[in-house]
Amino acid sequence: MENKYTKIDLNQWTRGELFQSYINNMRIVMSLTVDVDVTNLIQFAKCNNLKFYPIMIWVVSKVVNAYDEFKYSWDDKGNLIKWDYVSPSYTEFHKEDENFTKMVTDFSNNLFHFYEQFMLDKEKYKTERGFIKNQPLNSFDVSCLPWIKYNHFDVHVFDEGKFLAPVITWGRYNLDHERSMMPLTMNIHHAVADGYHLSRFFIEVQKLIDSFQ
Image (tube, rainbow, N blue to C red; front, side):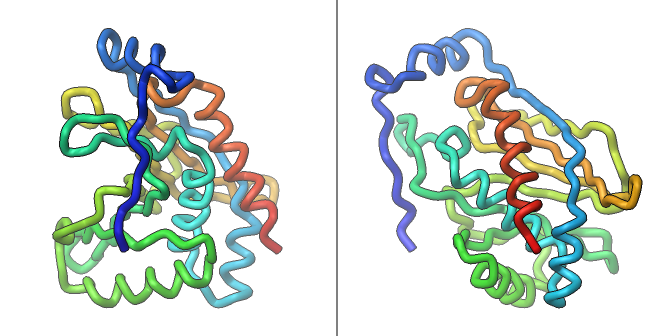
């Protein structure tokens, strides 16, 4: 599928001046961790004989694609662009050799369509290690630390400070007063998002999880 995008005119964009100020003068990445209640999602996975990991990837992908601030990037000429949609670039851990496969499953608004493709991709690349070649550019980063319940997790992207896509991570969920609570982290460049947008991500993730029956 062709990766479609819109080129951004900074002079016409309501955030244009603010964006340029951060990119030119103060390149900041915000990081926030929030405990989310994933009880409904765990129960949904069990009732439907599905795995939690791909469902959670779909949940964050659904919210990311609902808001423009998470879909900005650069074209090959250095112009700011906004993708029509973005897909999760996630890690699949292999316990037998303690390595991982980094792959992208094309995002679908339909959970079951996405889940099916996820499982096909997992099987297709099960013997591969590292980054699968020719990954689409319209992607954002997702990873998981299911071995530990953390309070905060930060990812440093060592580029020239212009990486705009969100980086999302979550850890192990634990029971707290009969609810399963899980740390969820997002890193996002301040040029494209403020604290309001960062907070809204977690609020909408929780709303979407709560909607599962």
